[in-house]
Length: 356
Ligand SMILES: [Mn+2]
Image (cartoon, rainbow, N blue to C red; front, side):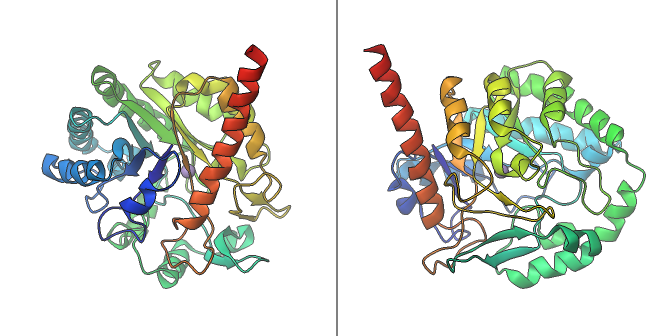
């Protein structure tokens, strides 16, 4: 079990607090101030390792090493950025990192319309209003996001988004098949390096799992995960199976995907989401019954598959008056972890009793 941490001075949650959540062994981290495409400096990596280990936490999972837009666009300049990516993989391997999460979403990372949508019990959560995104232009959404938060969020860095119009123009003629080809080109180069250095790359599905603002999105379903894994056949070409991202589309059966792809899932994101008939969704507590996903069944699928990878509660609500980065408070994610452990431990015990 691991827990995402944004770094010293960049997170409202401390390492000492993370260490006190039962069963958490490591942090999920990144150098958030390094722009996509640049090589990570060893001294910065070692600084995170030192402070995490001082708190008894490992740094085996990185999320994310971001992929430069030129790689996604297939520009000739991608060569330089792919070389940097390989150098970063080698350095991360050197300090003991085992899994690198990344995504291949054009322009935007995850997309929501409200960061603090009030729920019936007074808590707030990340919310996606489909009609609003369908009507809004991307600049409006960026402004809306900026107005709602005080911390920079990965994927929504102001410097990356200031050239929004230029980026949209660049993607205007990029089809889904182009994006697939560019992903294949990238993986053919980086996966062998990862494999040689004992690292597993794990692509995060698109969030939400459908096109937004006319931009192509390709990692959205069982079929697309199957296709990614077949691009380069290596244990180092894996997937970060995010139940909440995939589960925003009711057609996706997350537990079935866990069972089908178990040996290629080095990293699990587990959270619940309540999906409405009009296509809106909100991030609920982890509990089965609070959202549309059967988290018990999903955890059971991991358990039955003999899952040995890393897992984190993906996001949480904002509860008990906590002031925190949207989706990344301490309380609800810690509650989520205890729920996941409750299911897991009960399954373990039932298994032992059956064998006895
Ligand atoms: Mn996720």
